[in-house]
Amino acid sequence: LRTKLPAVGTTVFTRMSALAVEHSAVNLGQGFPDFASDPALQQMVSDAMRAGHNQYPMMSGVPALREAIAAKVATLYGHAYDAATEITVTSGASQAVQTAILCCVHPGDEVIVIEPAYDCYLPNITLAGGVTVAVSMELGADGYSVPWHKLAAAVTARTRLIIINSPHNPTGSILRESDLQALSDIVHGTDILVLSDEVYEHMVFDGARHESVCRHADLVARSFVISSFGKTYHVTGWKVGYVAAPKALMAEFRKVHQYNVFTVNTPMQHGIANYMADPKPYLALPSFYQRKRDLFREGLAKSRFTLLPADGTYFQCVRYAAISRLDEAAFSEWLTTEIKVAAIPVSAFYSQPQESGIVRFCFAKKDETLQLALERLSSL
Ligand code: PMP
Ligand code: GLN
Image (tube, rainbow, N blue to C red; front, side, top):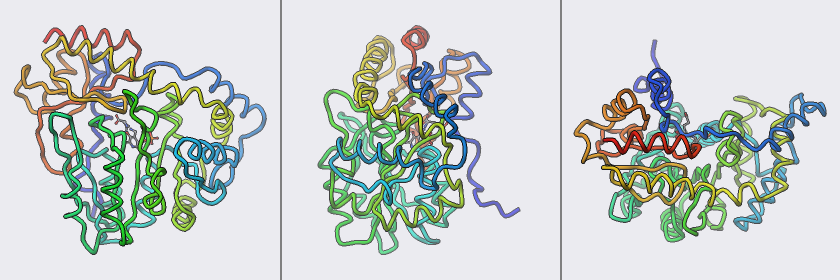
């Protein structure tokens, strides 16, 4: 068998969640909430089913949902997408990422990825026949940052796409206005496209604002902007997300989309469209998660872990040098099986072996789950 992804195994999230279940560990590994979503949202989906919204919707998604997305993006970030031609509802952000890559990356094209990177980018670049060019973030006293001069130096005549992700999984760092300006300067005058993974757009803390590429006229004209209702509405298992892009790019996206999923399940699209009429749930998200972040950080500050900054997402990265000399994968497994708290090794987010002595915890959990984990982590 001539395999297409010889270097790929089972994802670290699947493996660590299975280990957590096997050892009855508190699962702070894979990123998902352990609390319920809003019953009002669930009711709206069930109402949509009962109202008969159960057949194929339009290929690009239910119009009311695309319109709600366009209105939200315009209000929050000031860019007016045409809901008819520039927004497509996807089966989670994952399908949006894959479809965006497949529709624009040709064999031999280079795609610049900033590492550590969420794990779905690289395999999809490989499937498209593209070549990943990895640029590592730098870790200083203020946390992780993108060395834009190194990214600029990585650009060649073959560069087709640059993938950015803010708020960033796994580091919890966020891009600032100056970062987007640096990116804009790099791509100016080229035909390089941008894939901006903004699934954690509503999890930005300490009064900072989310720097969507939609705020940046030069970038938005060449970008696929991707988000996910799974993160925003605490329903990761629903797998509903979207992509926004200028009309010409979206036309190419839809050519692929119509043949990999064709369209996305109908009742959830109606339910989410209705629920979006009220902005309060997503506007409340920064303070909701900031409180959990602070609770978790205050507990960890009393432990022998060293906290890294956590400006966005629902992830907290920590150093464990004072506790163990194991590598990140071995330490995460030991933590899961012996201490009964699952974590994710940050080394899993690099294309080449890289050990930083850092693991990632997810704090999208009930307070009592976090307290139980903190008791165990503080015993080390
Ligand atoms: N991008 C990032 C950065 C993520 O963390 C995730 C979810 N883990 C995704 C994309 C995929 O989102 P979805 O579950 O909506 O496919
Ligand atoms: N995005 C989630 C995380 O980073 C995991 C999603 C998955 O299991 N693929 O933990």
